[in-house]
Length: 413
Length: 187
Image (cartoon, rainbow over all chains, first blue to last red; front, side, top):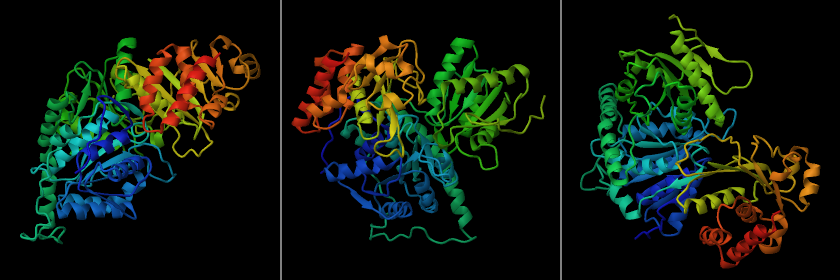
């Protein structure tokens, strides 16, 4: 029987430690992991919990991230609660198996500490790995600070393992900015946290010998399409379960999460849409700009990146005051507009408001996202609102040294 | 909001020091951040650690800050690092050095108009005498308590003991002595 871990009402934890504590409290059956910066401490701390008797489950050290996710798939199909952690290149190496996990409907929890993808080699945080996962069929939830990394890791088990969902869940946090920044965290007691997560309920487990099953079977054109459509429907339908789990979590802790977080949108003329720790910085910048210059800025963030909250984004952006929406992507778009821009624009296109849409690429490789830079972007959007058309290139780079870089002029005046 | 920037070398315990300070402050109901910029830094490389302290939840995730206090915990970094970067009119400097304050300031042009805001303490010698090796991270916090008057020495010592609880008693006692000496010796 695992020992109880003594916790204070307030702890000073970084995002990695917070996530590892949530994994410990969930009493996972199998963790198969291969450490990589900046998520290494999650694996390292978890190993220490095992060694010190705080976890009853198995900890499998594997030879690569491909092996880590493969071990997770096997253990999950066998019928246990399973989780792991990774970042960046490790995430990329896992990618093949990510699709297997979601296709086999295995509710594995993957705590991702977002980091840039090489080349050039870079250990710092951007959203390249998170974006790489966006078509993999996993639920993707995004934490903006260490408290949220703890809270949402607990929620991830409840969501993925829900019998109406049965899908793997990624819980993302920003490399270094969140993973290595210690702050006040208010943890739940072990018993309370475990009760919230609940006992694991196996479905079609391979270790149930009285009822043999096959996982990961081959289907060609006869059935593959139907399977993928069902999987997509399960992802889309998980929205109501996510809402339910967030509501239960609020009832337990008072801390509220929504699939789309929005701040000061009631009367906003300009909105910034972004992900991760930058959301908190942007909210601070928006509050200051409202006070200092009277520019009515709101902030919107898809807390749930997958399933993409098309419904709630549309609802949030459909206000009579809103004129300009700027989407900030922290991932190199590789010859396109940023993914957030594309997805949010698609939702905004169906609103009455039809705001002007602009795109910034920012923060690649961990470039600092400054309050002053956020304000500069907001002022630029206000200028579009005043002019009645987009006065800059539609896609720009924020915080980039050297000559300004921008693409595509508006065709609307 | 109180903001602190540490100038340190990787391995001197600035991250542990920043987290330790954060842990003590958090017990008093305040909100804290403790973080660093190191990544792939190797032992001995110059690096920065940071603290933010406020009564309200801290949402600023920007790394850069305009510090209220600058701690320099490696003597050579006072000369080679840009320690007055993002200085404010009230920024206070606590620098570990074996030099007198006058000698130090006379050698660092950037500090010459800030003499009334510079404090010196020899955390290297203090930690060698007490802990037995150059570990300037905890003594600098003793000096900080004296300069900032944030908490009384006794309150800080009591809470630091809890932060260091996982260490052997001998190391805890040595750290308490180091903090006390730096508190008394900072000028």
